[in-house]
Length: 317
Image (spheres, rainbow, N blue to C red):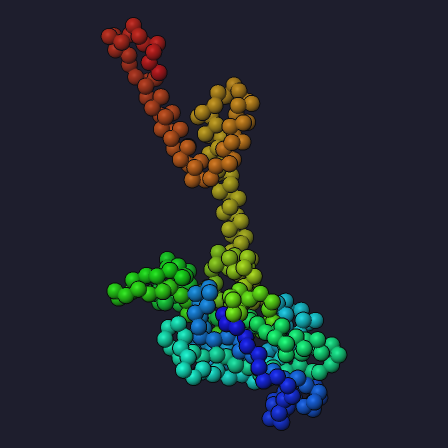
């Protein structure tokens, strides 16, 4: 994710007017429009330890043509404020990214009509108040830098360093093969100090628990197909959770029988309530220890008391 820097504000030139009018219902004149430049994203490793590959930037360049600009990734028609009419992948001369590769940006030109309604936004852009942007897109591939496995297929953690061919290697995920570009947004507080990118992985590349984190962070956009599959996975997980809940409840009852006098209902209720505060791991450990003690007691009670110990037999349990 990278800062979307705005520049070259003002009236579009003749060539730009021709491109802009491809998206309008009537031909607009230059003085009716406001055009500006924006860097949508780049090939740098972001704070989430993900990055767009150079080929991904080229693919996104085509997909973002004609895409609308909105606010805060809120997909409402009333939030539409601008539209991209030109894109280009640019190399920044003399600048390298964190990997030592030539630093590249997805550069775009966008326009909006001049009107009383847009005057405030234009002023905010020119004054630098509206500056940071992020993009909403879907990527088919997310590959680990350490092992080359897709997201969710390996145990490597983003941001951690591992040994690869004897050298220290940072774990990040390369995003490539763009499937779709949804929108780009003006954002007040990007996920990174510089900017923020909304990312999603389609097909089986998107993992349910990875999705859960992304939704919590407000960084995810999913397609209809992904939403349907996620809904199905959620229903399956819900069934498993209900079955696991019933199983744990039975184990709690077994533990109560092991440690509490069955004639004391009050003690049983209190003990059962206390068990509800334990984790599944703690419950199984307690059940295992209780079962072991119970089996030892049964073994001792079933044994034959020797004649030598018969006198003190009432001390044996």
